[in-house]
Structures are given as C-alpha cells and as structure tokens.
Length: 341
Ligand code: IMP
Ligand code: MG
Image 1 (spheres, rainbow, N blue to C red):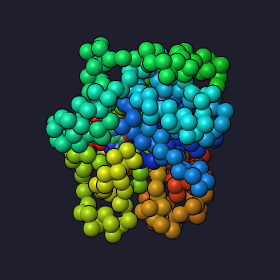
Image 2: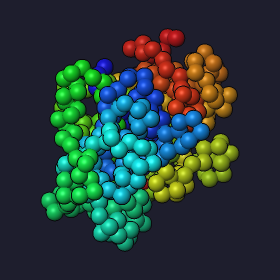
Image 3: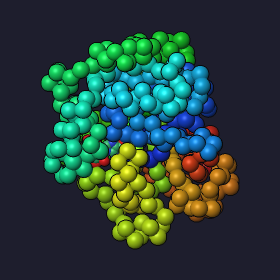
C-alpha cells in the first residue's frame, strides 16, 4: 500500500497525530504530506515524555528520514510553520508547495472581529476562513512570494507523484474531521472547505487512482469544539464523570462530548471511501485497556465494542490506541471482513 490517506471521522480531535506518527514507522514512509485547511488544526504527537502539538508541520516528524511536505491546498501561517520547524529540528526535510496561500495578520483580525465567524460559528480565530475568501477572490499572497519560506519552497505534487512512481511509501495527512466539511458537514457549523479524503488528495496534488488505503480515525467517543449539533451530547457533569473532559489543542476551549455514534461513523466511512478504521482513546472509555499492545489484553467489554464497530460500520479496525504515547497501540492484521479474531 504505497499511498495511504488518513482522515478524521467525526469533528476533528480524533487523535490523528498519534496514528500518523505510528504509521510513519510501521509503513516505513518516505514522505508525509499534509492536506486540509491550515493552522486551525492541532495534531498531538507524544514521543516518550515529550508532547508536541503541530498545527502546520506533518505529524510524521519523529521519523527522522521522512520528508515532510505541505500541499498546495493548505493555508500557511509562516510564523507558526517556522517555529514548529525550529522546535522539531526538521529544517532539512521540510517542503512547502510554492502555491500554498499565506495567512496574514489581516485574516486573523477579520476572523476574530467577525461576530458571525467567531461567535455564531465559533471558529478557531486563526484566520483560515478569511484567507480562503481571499484565495477564492484570487487576491491572496502565495508561498513563493514570502522570502522567509524561500528555502522550503518545492513542487509538492511533483515530489509525491515521483515518490509513488518509484514505489515509495507516502502518507497523506488529513486534518479536521468529516463533519467539519464545508460540503458534507454540519453546515454552517463547519470549516471553510471540504476536508474529506478526496479533497485532501486534491490539496496535495494526487489523483484518486493513486490511493491504496484510506484510514479513517474515530475516537472511542465523540467530541466537538465550536458550535453546532452533537448527537447524544452529554451534560458537563456526565462528561466529567466519564473522564471525557478535553480541551481544544488550538483554542484551549472545552470540548463537548457524546458517546460513539454508529450512524455518523457509517456515513463518514462512505464520504471518505475508508478501507480501515483506526480507533483511538479506547483506554479513556475502558481504563483497564491502558497501554495494551495486543488485542487479547483487552477486556471482553472493550473487545465487544471494537467488534460492534466493525459489524455496524462494515470496515475492519486495524489500529487501536490505548494511551497517548506513540507506542501505546494495538496493530491488527486486516481480515478484510468483520471480525473473527
Ligand atoms: P475554522 O475552521 O477556524 O473556521 O472554525 C470552524 C469550525 O471548525 C469551528 O467549530 C472550529 O472549532 C472547527 N475546527 C476547525 N478545525 C478544527 C480541528 O482541527 N479540530 C476541531 N475542530 C476544528
Ligand atoms: Mg486537533
């Protein structure tokens, strides 16, 4: 499977960063290329004791020989990207497409000043919506016009397609989550573009015939920041009681929480053409699973939950997160059909 695309299944914050950093090693990738909106996303990667939150840099940075690319569709905040390159020591292996659009201070101000965006929609205030507006108007600045980015500028689509032609492993990193899609999500409470797997491919410049696997990441429960409906929404008290309290990686806002939703999961699988499920934070719902590395270490209840997802959604669960650290994971052989393990 030379080309794997990874996307979020619900409203973002499914734990994509951890799954990407794991797959980077397991698939021995040559390139991790990021699609999606821009720095409104925050992917968390924990390596040993150290936790990183990357908003621009691809999450496979711990794999030291992987090239880290940002696709043309992505909006770049140069300050954020440069500080992440510095913090991760990755300056020799980062590439930014010459046509990435640039977020400027005016976009951030417009995002925060707009009552519609900041209050009604509850945006992250990172300027992505207003920047995409300028992009659509064809007035936005692009990466090749920014001197600070000069040494990183590349043809991302060219690099990725060449790598695939040479049989190398490429991991395409999606951001946000399916129901934040401008087209297929919970409009108007969504982000400023489509972020399903097809669009993520468009962002990085590969065609649908290149894709071998689409991994969809579901958290074992559902959370949402910002406004908009969340089926099965729990009260704050109940969220606390279950230990499901979380805060946004970008905005630090508390996330609303609900139990896993099978109908949404089924729809998300269709919208993305997903071929595998990565299930994260199983240990948050079933604390006795913490740190498990083998399916047989799971409690019967947790195993039953995994099986139910496969049966109801019709796609195999191939990865199960059992803790925040990159190695706290169960990797399963794919059976190609709902569980018989
Ligand atoms: P915007 O993308 O900043 O315009 O925000 C629009 C909506 O999408 C808000 O509800 C945000 O909280 C949400 N959103 C955007 N990106 C992410 C993400 O990466 N994770 C979770 N929510 C996000
Ligand atoms: Mg996030």
